Amino acid sequence: MTNFKTALFGTLAAAATLAAVAAPPAIGETLKIKRLNPQLGQQIELAPGVRQHLQDSLRSRCVDLAVFVTQRRTHGDRVRVTYGVKNVSTIDYVSGANQQAIVLSRHGSEVGVGRFAQLNAGQSASWSVIVRRPFEIPHTYKAVFSHDPDLFIDGNEMNDDCNRANNSGETLVTS
Image (cartoon, rainbow, N blue to C red; front, side):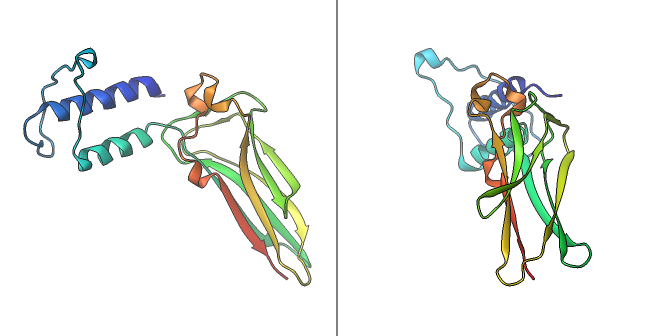
């Protein structure tokens, strides 16, 4: 398991290395580290391509949970709505019990709640509910990653989701 602070320090050291050279490095080139002193006002300035590379690198070193919702007709007028979460990062998600859940709702009313505390890198957790197909008006089922308000400030970096853009999903159930 990678420690986020160590990964961040390594990435910033790489940034300092890249900023300390006179010309942009060639791919695969080894660079010497030049120390910077922030007390003297020395700063790291990065070319746009290097900046993007570092942002991508940091993103790959933090937890990213992705929410999903699917549906499948079972029999008669029944539909199985499956909702869940997948750890799409390379870092394990480790948290306390009841600190987070995936909440499934239909038009704002809670239909199901899936609780979890740990998801290893690449692992998924899912839950299902059986619902009736609507006869006229389609129903939208939405799943959302719900967490304690202090989840991002509790001092546990292993439960800080760095990509909130994929923390919800929905499916439309029709007749």
